[in-house]
Length: 477
Image (cartoon, rainbow, N blue to C red):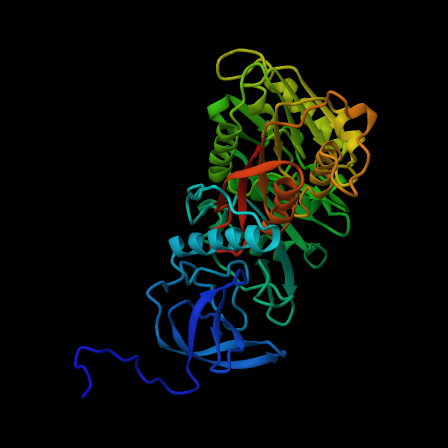
């Protein structure tokens, strides 16, 4: 006789799939009865679904969602009318159908999995994720422009899902409200230009007080078109920049326009930038990110700090409010010159009215670092590393090679003579925009360079997208 209190799982049809998890491409992950993995676009964890397979491999399949038979409690109504799985839907966001807190949990798990599976590193402490506004956060964007003759209209927006076509967008809730409201007027403006067929892109950059639009134009603009741009700027309180070729050709349409900048109020720093410069798309998160990074670095007034991949000085200038001396290193002479300008601007304008610590900026190819180059930059008690997606492999490898030579590891290179007396940093904060390259470099730092990974955590810089930013702290073992 069966136990009346015993519960048995419901008997679902054989073609239904139970979704167990979610990958970083926002695909639900399920398994067939034979164990084969199925990635299902649009499905969420805890759902029972049916799906149509459109790609098969020996160990996995890719499929499209056809029906949801049991909905996940994590599923929410998307906040944008242009989000969806159908043809023509905007492809700018992948996760709007997933609860915002669940998005953070998925990204945190991606960071942990990458660190362990790729680097065999497990942080001693997991940092609380850095979160901020889920809407209206995107202060930088590259919008495609397309004059669609058959439809008799101009489209301005992101591309459609898995397509080269531009989505037919009227609003975009992840952009600041005033920019979202500008999409339809922008479409009308471009449609009225003589150059509407030779303007493929509008780049957006918002500062704290200025909104800049960069018009990419393949042919010279007529005076009539320039007049229309000026009229639009006056009506919508924006400034136009023109770009005829590469980023170096960008110029402000009206030279007397106010300067584009953002502030780091905690440190009394103002950061001027050009709309084509690399700056963080989410200023709300950037302020918290800089604050946490410096707090975790634990800089003391007597210490020297190196900021690797320093950019325009987003971390370097705040560091100069706390350290004895700072060295900022970047790969471009032009970018280093801009960093020096930003340092000079802020030297006597800090929060406490005190000048910044002595700071040098130098240009160097950071993807070809050697132990000799590393030692030549001198001893610094603390490092901050903020590389692009490629990571900081050469830098981490140079540090690891020095350590391996010091301990006399088998097969290690000889210790450079110049390394006598040189000391590695006691603490490193590594800010990453790619968990895979962070994990690779963390493996080097922990297993070969003599460090412990004491803390790591996820930074939700891009809500509703699959992009994962993170931060890890390493300390000499």
